[in-house]
Amino acid sequence: MKLTKVLNLLIAITLLGITLTACGPDTVEARLYGEWKNKREHTYVFREGGSAMWIYPVGEKTDTFFMEYRIDDTQTPIALDFYNFENGPMKGKTLYGVAEFVEDDRGEAVRLNFRAGDDESVRPEDTGEGGARLYVRL
Image: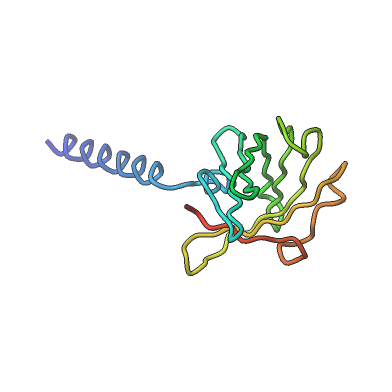
């Protein structure tokens, strides 16, 4: 009887742990999944597996660029690069960037700063340099 109670308790604890782990993002990359929009209506959509979209308004229309991303959260700030653009003016180029999660009065946000270049030497040092934009989770 005691063994049954102990086993039931262990099963309950294990299931609780699995549930809590599944409820929220446990990596920086997982925190990026979803849609983020800035004040200029530029939207980034991050998907699991390293694919992303950049939705860019042009007058009454929008352009959508498909690309891949890679993230290195061992660096401070977080290194975030867009590469392998399938279309648009960035095709064949890489955007080297940095990212920082912040709180905004509109909710969870991420500040991004990118520079195009041939290698990581162009990467901005922080998210406060010129060109940085704040994106809010949709």
